[in-house]
Length: 367
Image (cartoon, rainbow, N blue to C red; front, side, top):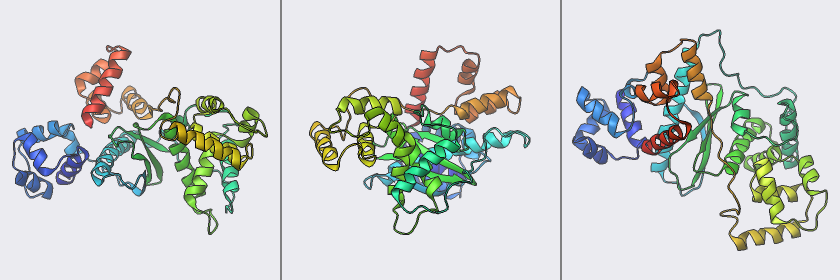
């Protein structure tokens, strides 16, 4: 257990054996022996390792171990393996704390629902248009109507999807990943991405859960999930009501306003206008040329759409504490905080601004 966790924590910290050895004043050979399980560190060296890797010493002996299966990364081909190792370590650490927390609840209490798809979905999808229709069916089944979805994370968590955010610096070469822990779908998004891109990743991953096993031969799953995501975030009927049924031209500011109302990028909204037949392919091409000329494909103009955050894990930790399923020490461990910091937070002794600064500092230190 210790050897595996040490190696994972080292990779998650982005350190080589030599670099870690230098940090703690040991030889690289000593680190190698620890990771191979041939020797164990002394208590003093254990504390040094924990400090260097920014984990609590309990991390190395955590009883809960999860297996994230069916992992698929949404990344660029140039993303270094070292970065993926850091993401993997961060995700597994958070997933383990999630799983341990859920196991502390009694069997009679279900803090999060079991994920299940609606029964009335079609058995097979033969076109990208049907993938869009599927998105609207999901909206109706989840009673979301056709209005903007203001919180995608909350929407998915309420249906039993585990959402994990990672602060690992990726130079914007990683959007997210998806997998499963047992029967629970897990979606990971990067905090380095803009809020609208995070939302599209979440909708795209939901698309994978919905269309999996339903696509007819010849239908590309990635394209189907993109079509699903676009329609889920910005339904055709809503877009027509906003822009009109037929347009000769669309002002870029209209797309910017759509972005901030529906949480979808200007570029994605432009593609949706083409998919819905509101503009002709020629008009869409001209607008895409304008985007390229102004550099809007790389960075869109105007105020950025705000990031989404997950509070469910913290909420359930405090709920477990309130119900006396756990004590302060375990609560602090599950939140990755020191006991003293947790006690201050629990007593509401830290101002909101100071608390946010502390959390940002901890996140930066973890990377």
